[in-house]
Image (cartoon, rainbow, N blue to C red):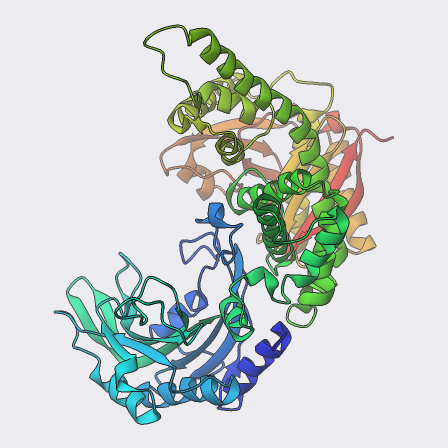
Length: 608
């Protein structure tokens, strides 16, 4: 290994901090809701307000290495260079230095720190169009630094902006290239435009000097620089490898798998692909669960993406006969050996991360065993039909799993549609996605209609305790808000006939005294045997009267509000107990962390 990942990380940060940049560290991988994306997908994304002019608290020269998650091309993971989690090495000038300083520093970094030959360095600059002129300034600066004129290329695509987004910074960019080999491929012009891939892009500097508006491209008051170099790509390049899984980011994990399953990485295309998918997906899993705003697998939003990633890793572990406990061991390698210095929060949350992974694996293994059998039945049924129909002269072989079957795999056996598609593709089949979506819509409509009937009278006559535990959740949340303020909100819940599980935003463990106070609040409400009243009003009226809850609606939409006089007034679809005395007694059994800033309480009732 010519350079390790830890060495590369330190060289980048040291280079720019020595030149007056403040290391701002990495922000959460989870989208903040303001950028309109589920995950941070670019190093500059969290800095967008500052690139538009907002003063940054750490000044005008910044640097960091920012983790990103991108899953739009998840099906490509398994090749040599696609990753769902990756890092971007960045530095920024917010109205400070511009092209002269930046071209010089990037050139110095590449030649003096990383030892690249200046005579081999190639660069592309903006060719100009009707909106902005040709970037001769950058080209001239590159030539003065020592980049050969014949190695500078003017391209129309050397322009950076967020597609379709107005009032955002944009401008020409300067991309840096270097040859993997000195030997041309034999084509007439084997340069950076040659399809042979001899030249690799190692990074780019964006000169944000314009603002995209509905009236065109206007000059920014403060010109900015945004630099982005892919960490994994740079590590591959500096070590002379084209396979990202041969760097030390993954080598320990790959070596572990080789020994565990007695296979050699690279000997077989299918097993190598599975090894890569496992290595990539478990790294992303660790990062998402261990993030400062960490998430857990679920059936919605970012949690659903995480669940899909984890379950894909489990399935590929089974394909190469890797014990599923091995996935936990792989997670430990990332936490303890690869990212121990760069992400110390992973070490702090190690037990939580590993236990969360174990829980999801156990849940999925039960799903997978039953689902695989059902999937095989679906395929067998199609093949039997094809065999029966073969005698028909107009026979056309069926190679598609219909939407109804795909939805049954999802609804009954817990198979995400993407998993069914992936498994079907491996068997040479397609999946009727439109048919699946139609079944899904029908299911939602049925559920909505059924729920409306159940809740119309205010309560559902369900088992001896689920409804009462729902009411206990309301009272407990009211108690938390009384103790810690109205900023406390429900972040998730799960209720069975035996217990409630309730997640809420809070940044620490409740003390024993606080637990006792909360229990007393709920039990006082129970002992008073207060009636639980169901009211109907517009959403706007409910909010005006102090109603709160996770339910969102249009201002004039009629909603249900459950009132426990003197205790709670919450917007909710129900069902609930008729009066609080039905709960008998409330007891908190356990509290734990869900993620940074989110706590979980597990409690029971009727424990006298």
